[in-house]
Length: 326
Image 1 (cartoon, helix red, strand yellow):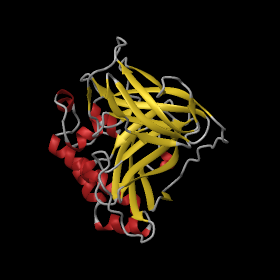
Image 2: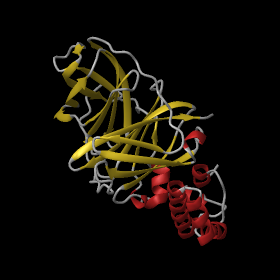
Image 3: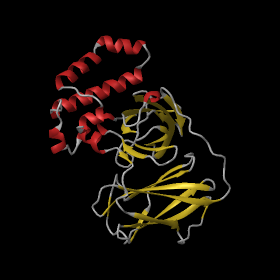
Image 4: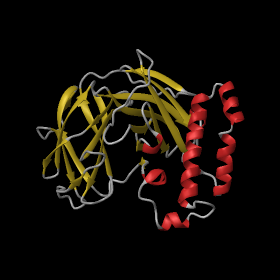
């Protein structure tokens, strides 16, 4: 199946898309959407159709997409759809040696200094790293029940070794996920579980949201809408997530600041923490207080989504849960 249609799940000619766009954006359609109180979802639909129409018409994407497969785009929205979703990216044969800074595996609840050494497929320390979204390494740490989340950027010390300070709020198992670009290879993702000594706390369960999500975190009110709706998301299906962020005190739209080279990041893990996705905001569809993500959920089940944004110099992490259908 060609890549364009696999991402969208349907085939449309340029003429059909133009007609669909004109029909959807007509006065009667907008009035009906307002009357039904579907403003957020309508805006999401209109934005997606507008950009998809423009991309497909300009790129000649009609029934056949062989030209895109032979000569794939290197920028723009179509490039984003094809390249940005990092679902279970391979470790490419690379390995991680993770430990406490003293070289032991003894980690205690609270603040810890970590040492992370990256080894190539031959078992030798990696000597060359390239920046990915402004950093040489992204380190994601989550607790077994996904209630604790950290997104860190370890300091490179040379000879394949990084150091980071991590905070473990309680004893128990934690998953470390490292993202890096070694030796001119593609983005590489490695994972390992580590045990933290200390008093354990009761596990919490994921609570999937339905419809539109609204929550307040660290002074930001986040309203999240999706297309399709959150209660209709299926595995392998393209999903558009739109965040509208406002100041929790004033209600005014929040003027977000760039975070790691983009308007926002989303890290997604399923309940078992074996399905991992990391996506970045779609630049062409994000501005001011509105941030759009495109993603796919690789398998059915419950997932936690952590949206990350920078506001007034501080990174705000906004979690919510979703259940994906087969």
